[in-house]
Amino acid sequence: MKHSQTADLWWKNAVLYCADVQTFADSDGDGQGDLRGMTERIEYLADLGVTCLWLMPLYPTANKDDGYDITDFFGVDPRLGSHGDFVELVRTARSAGLRVIVDFVMNHTSDQHPWFKSARRSTDDRYRDYYVWAPTEPKSSAKDVVFPDLEDSIWELDERTGEWFLHHFYKTQPDLNIANPAVQEEIAKTLGFWLQLGVSGFRVDAVPFLFARDSVPGVEDAEAFKPDRYLGDVRSFVTRRLGDAMLLGEVNLPYEEQKRFFGGEDGDGLNMQFDFNGMQQLYLSLARGDASPLAEALRQRPAIDVTSQWANFVRNHDELTLDKLTTAERHEVFDAFGPEPEMQLFDRGLRRRLPTMLGGDQRRIRLVYSLMFSLPGTPVLFYGEEIGMGENLDVEGRLSVRTPMQWSDGPNGGFSTAPARRLARPLPTGLFSPEHVNALEQRRDPDSLWNFMRRLIRTYRQMPEIGWSTVEILDHDQPAVLAHLCRCDDWRLLAVHNLGADTCTVTVTLDDVPEGAVLRDALGVTAAADDDVPVSSGTPVELRVEGHAGRWLRLLAPGEESFL
Image (cartoon, rainbow, N blue to C red; front, side, top):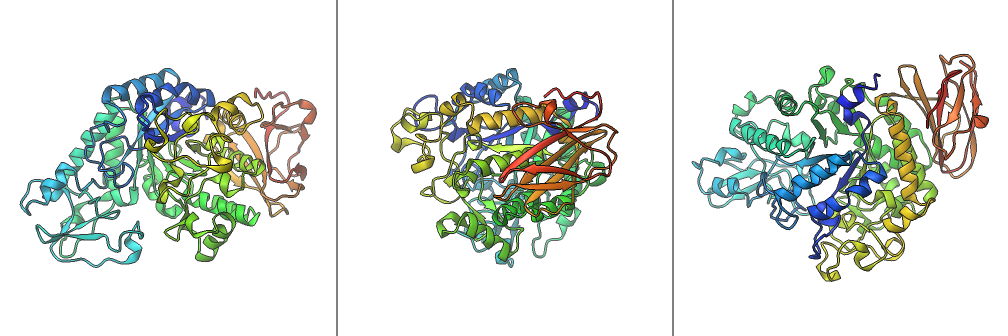
């Protein structure tokens, strides 16, 4: 790896931070977060060490699916601000060293979008083919439905025209006909518009649905549409407009299918994809206190093109999906971290944040983030993770984890000066309320979770090789411990993380070690040479690991310095 490459492929060692503008910071006291409030908090993100801000949907919306039901792809929700406010946010972020990416949601529109309102007037309407229609009711099985809480089919009858339209999500979100060249042109215009306003890329929503060939009974024309080719066309378009633009895809599929969305061996598809498989096995490992499920997932990660990257995450803005686990495994995780029915969603996931699932145990919380940042890939944080925010189960559905950011112990957690009844959503109460969990106090406390995360991010950023590494799982005899090696050319980092409660000694063997090499702590407050562990090629080395703790150890050849 050449360090000059880290600027060209910036996403390979970035730190992403996902935030919902509506719940982040309210600048005008109306109870809704806004773009100006977000801009005022850029210094906070820069101080934490974030390098890329990912904004959840900020477009005009019918407000039936938390902003993902869009009525204007070129607009800004007036509750959040204006285009001018958005440009000021991007400019301020760039001046502080942060890039901005936005959610790209063009698998569907709201049923209140002008295109769909026009399309349902007549089967001959000019926008009719912007959507997917069937003259007779197609078959639909329960497994096709994304939201089984309110839907039992992915087809809905439009009574005015007597035809059925496709909707993989809620019936208020009709799917766009991506095979239509006119829709592809609209997609290009939308991507180009936001790139022109200064964004550095897009988090692409619902990728397996967006880049898919829709099946309509009796209609064969869609066979001419090649989803993989079209994904390559989108990648080519955004990189023509902005050479270092990044596409981060939401692809919750088995690894081999994810490789196809990277663009195969050529890597001409998505630049990054979330590692949903690794995330789910992490929670199974935590539930069992056994690192084996996660270790096996990491062994199965396929090799990807050098320009591609995995996005590692602990929590996202939706339910914490566990759909790739078996039914028995999923219920193991439910029993450990969400035993009550109101904590679960769709019988496939949890609507809780990590700190509440772990009972507020700081050792285990820090263990999980130490592990996430040590894995080859790019870490992605969901707002509030850096202070250990909890959820509010009184808030409906997936929105339980999208409560206002807790800035202080003052009224409304410092989020807004509005009366509490006017807040975008109610704040958590009890042990995870702003009185106990807030950014202001934690920034002042050197032993807080916020300062731990800040040190973790700084260490990760000082070793860009982590993001460029391959992962090697090391064999040993301690089931609770994950030991893995990050390798990038001659650079190596050994990470050991103990998911069990008991302190243990793990024995590992490294190959191709220079004579006289040592392992030096890279994660502690100090990295003193007095604590170096001598290591030689092919000789077992013993490492002590505290219960629910992790260690990062740099492999240093004689004369090699670590500048951490």
